[in-house]
Length: 401
Image (cartoon, rainbow, N blue to C red; front, side):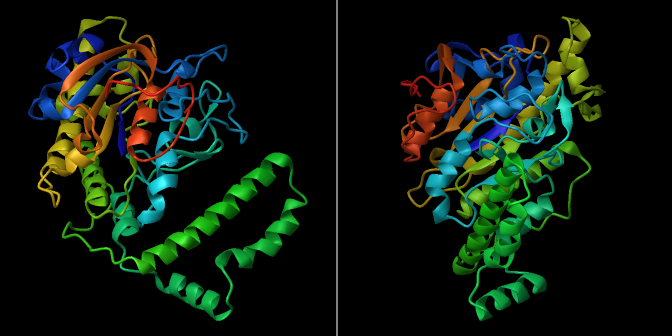
């Protein structure tokens, strides 16, 4: 299960697919996906009503990110009392994560931000994270491909980590035991919110320890893919390296759940290589200016090109039964804003790729006429073997996917 997020909405007339069922047509913005038309479902008419203001005023970019995988309304705060909901990827990771080296993988091209104010009184944590382990604990994505590679395919522990592990074994204590006594002492002096944060930290320490032990037990085959040097200067290359690593993570079964924030919503990145020197967010408030609309359509095609690159890569990998790896993956591509000029969260741009091995009906278009996007996620969770009755504002599973 994978999710790839595009920011700032799209130019809907050039993004929307047409036709019905299997006789559908991809749009100009999605033309690079034509070779994968039979592998894609164009899912029209899915909404995220919890990303609307609903009385909270401005902040559509923060809400778009925060709501995308949770289906929940973000508490409007720029402080530490953030609250949203558990995301679909983390529900899946909780179910299948014990079988892999990493329960889940979180990627981005933006450096993670967990605090401070970003969008109209919303914490940056909402805008720079897609995955939420708990209602108040995001899973920060990694933007440096080298760090991702080392996390996935490291041969072992560093000298310092190895020495620490030796001490733990010698004293027959876990890493948590070393900090527990001080933590208990500290808890007495903390307020309710800070105690909750400390509990989350201690849980993370325990999970880190278990992951190290799991890594030592697994015989992960290191791929021939060269270790990245760091963050590429070229944005397209950065995106493709991250997509490469996402594909490698699935291929080596290092994880079965991944999210990729191609850029945070509200990103004002420019695209001079495709003739768009202006910032993306600034352009998205186009007010029907034809020049701006044309440039935004170029950005939409740029992101679709990168997704096509990823689909080509995972479709080329053959499984033991002769099928492609894409058939065994369910990949959602889209964003939490439809029309960037209006900041709309209805009729979202959503594609679903792959999933034949899980029984998905690839190669068609379907209009769900206002159903919650969270309903799609319930359907995907069911195919991952996760028994979930609700997610965010879901009303039931989609019956036609």
